[in-house]
Length: 85
Image (cartoon, rainbow, N blue to C red; front, side, top):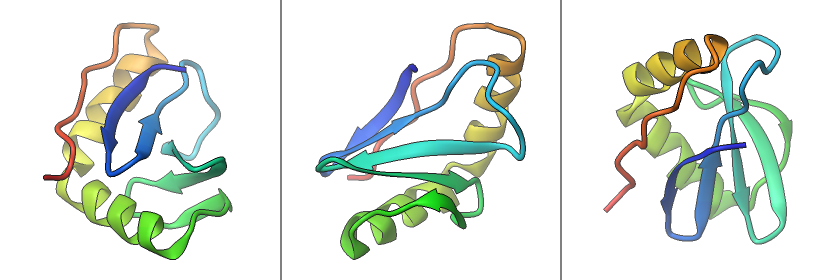
């Protein structure tokens, strides 16, 4: 699963040919969650701080997440997304 961003120890990944609805995967210190592009937790858990940072990042990069989702559907290389500063 390609890593598309990483910030403050949170790794963001997106699978090729993953099921809908459109989402991404976040991992922090062994905890994992799948989130919608709007930041809703679809499954899994993250510590509160990691979840807050991940939601902030998703809010800033929704358009880029959607573009990567479309690339993944086509089996094309995903584009790295700028991390939080």
